[in-house]
Image (cartoon, rainbow, N blue to C red):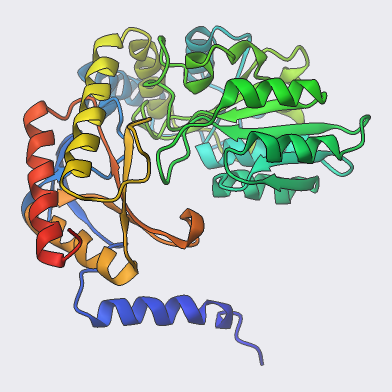
Length: 399
């Protein structure tokens, strides 16, 4: 009889070989206590957090926490139902109203996770007979949404405008076409040339979906993302985002100005057949989104942190994923998984947590140490981080 787990044998062997070297399991770290958006207790010691997506530091905001506590008292711990049945509370409408105001768009639809937002929107609007044209480095949730929807998937080389146009040129003129892009790509922290790409998409009659998960709250004059920053947000048909990064809780959403968008609430299966977010979560999200509208100072400080860390690591001899800082993500390229894991553990011993990212999640088979900065990292913490990287890198032989 075939063992259905046999397909995972190469990954099991790789993991066992890695752990046999004595390294701590980098994918099973437990945080015993979270002290603040930038500090936690890990393995019994105080650790600087540089591997969360808490870009704007909203997880411990007093107003956000108060809103969640009040919702617990007023509405209980959960809805126990779908949005189309008993699962729409006042808070769900309030957070959708906050998103409409934040993006200055007419429609907002909230999902239980960001992954589910991509899964639901993509699989529903692009189906059999339609074409999805997407960047080959797109997030797993985007690829899974494509699979679920049964559309013809046409990938193009990462951030390659000419390759994207070549794909579009070959498609039938009268076919339904959806171009999917991301504002910030989460592995290397690089941004897309959205303005030029969206112009090409429109030239060939395609609708455009932009995932702004890693830019919402931080990039752009109002924190609306890369499309806003490049002056092309009005040309985007669908913006996908998440609450699990800058907003500081959990959930996903799509905003749109499409006049027929509200029908999605009845035809989008991952929305219809999933329990809605707990009242405490939507209350914290709504409060956080409204505060992010007025967070220009925090955005400016986060940019300063990004520039400082990028320059500091580059000057020490580390190979980085981008030539210049483009987002709150700074990726440090490792020679291979074994030395990447050793560097990750050396940093943890220094008192610093980062993400160890490996294939197939990473592009071009790279192993990365991914650093995600927070607006609440102090200038002193950033200098401390550079020192930790330097000592760990010298000890492991990376620099």
